[in-house]
Image (cartoon, rainbow, N blue to C red; front, top):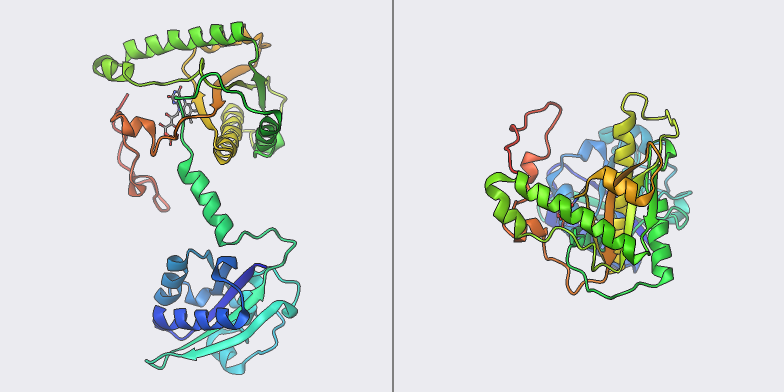
Length: 353
Ligand SMILES: Cc1cc2nc3c(=O)[nH]c(=O)nc-3n(C[C@H](O)[C@H](O)[C@H](O)COP(=O)(O)O)c2cc1C
């Protein structure tokens, strides 16, 4: 059973008071903290340090609902005092029910658990059973998803001579088919390379481009040559991802038709990347090739464009971080260099190769 937590508190309520109130309410409910799908409060408290700190420390998604939305929720214990201060007769009960996506107030397991802290400030906690039909994820599932995201790597080292079974391959195909795409265009096609002669021809095309890239690197040529940048020959599976000839989809791409189709292919590969990692399989996206040479080798029609050779298969070990970083080639940017607010204020990119 999954649960959602509704929180109300006085201004300046310490995190410790809120934490105690929550732990007492959880103990009353009989449910484990690992079952929490979300915590919630009123928009008025969106900057409340105790609330935000508690949710952060417990890894709960915290959301805030406006008074107008909270007041629409039927609750067992509405309060005139609460209405006077917040504009809604219920904060914690209504917020718990909204976060639980509950049908009605019968989902409340703990209605209102109140605690006055040592400093006199009040915290109120409500706990609601999450609607089982809404597919809400609990803490363990969130952590598993976060682990997959953090552990996904672009792999170039594969265990040679391995095969993967049909059922695993089908799950990978399903992951691709579940990917988002502009206007549901699904502009990608996948060719599974099973012919060893063709695989060898593709490997030769990649090696040729690795050579060209190395020569274009200038002073970084030797460092580039020292990197392993593909596993085309060794990987258990080799899938060519191809942008299909344009089907004229207009939805979402009238102004940027090519770019949105390319983005959709990227989104599909990302789904596959994560699904492969969850199967404990490595995936490496190889884009080092002359697209025309690859198109010829794969017999692509006019308008189709190869965008990747995906090497998929068992690996001896996943790299503990991006291989390009471990090899000293390049480090990821800090969050502050990637996220801004409202207007562009980022530094100009430095040329890296
Ligand atoms: C569109 C695309 C093309 C890529 N092509 C190559 C490639 O040809 N060779 C390679 O070694 N890595 C390639 N990569 C992998 C990136 O180098 C890798 O994602 C990046 O270094 C970060 O490492 P990580 O994926 O392990 O986090 C490609 C990645 C993307 C998204």
